Image 1 (cartoon, rainbow, N blue to C red):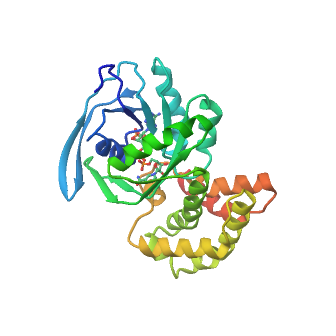
Image 2: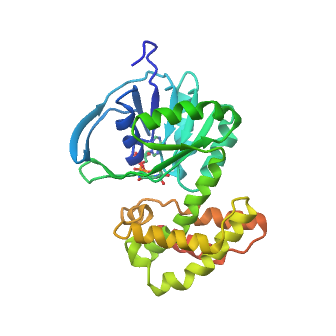
Image 3: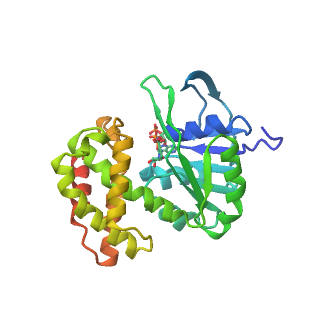
Length: 299
Ligand SMILES: NC(=O)c1ccc[n+]([C@@H]2O[C@H](COP(=O)([O-])OP(=O)(O)OC[C@H]3O[C@@H](n4cnc5c(N)ncnc54)[C@H](OP(=O)(O)O)[C@@H]3O)[C@@H](O)[C@H]2O)c1
């Protein structure tokens, strides 16, 4: 901990992905955790071959961390950030958003554009077991980039810290392209796994999925092209099939949420495509069907 008692990194939303970053960053940095009602201390077992016990007990006493990593679900992001910032005497130097999908980043930017903002799109995988252990389910690529002009000054430093912590991190000049690229894949997998209640790989060859995938990819391509993120329907479909194959045994995060009775992030995935379609005058009936069906399943 620095003499000023300000943690280098503060994790707002210490769930699966937040704790993974907390555990890895702690080797070289002070890290504080912020839950729903303020700073939290907790013990957890970190399982990745070996088991390490970690405990976070730092009490920031109203001090913002140097950099806030917001690792809540998309639908909790603005409320969580608002709650944390109200308790802090000064804003953090920079905020990094980890949410999947698109939409929550704009909401944060509308409110906190005076603070340097960055976003991450990561294919690292983490989850918690029923007894609280953190499982690093898979390593991947973390793409990091600024959301506003002042965020650009922080990208290199934060990216270097992530790399040093063991995350394969790539700096992006337009992080929104990375967010869209991941959204396009999630849009073709997650909702289907909920409706068919199956692991990712079981989608391939299922008639419900196969009949709807080509028109879905056409909608995704038209909306993403019109939004300035070039992708053809063929490329999107090939990527979705490859990910479904490579993650065949995985239960998607959306299906895990539904099985646990939690809200899903459908609104920032297929729901975001529907909203973009409305704004652009493009019909998106397959995305709308998926968004409505998942919403009905979790209501
Ligand atoms: N897990 C992954 O492998 C992974 C990979 C890539 C991207 N992501 C993305 O990362 C984001 C987080 O995912 P996750 O799997 O880590 O979710 P998660 O395990 O549910 O963690 C979210 C955490 O946020 C906390 N939270 C909710 N409201 C809060 C508030 N107002 N103030 C402070 N904390 C609050 C939750 O607390 P409670 O437990 O009390 O609800 C929970 O600890 C999602 O957008 C997800 O799509 C996740």
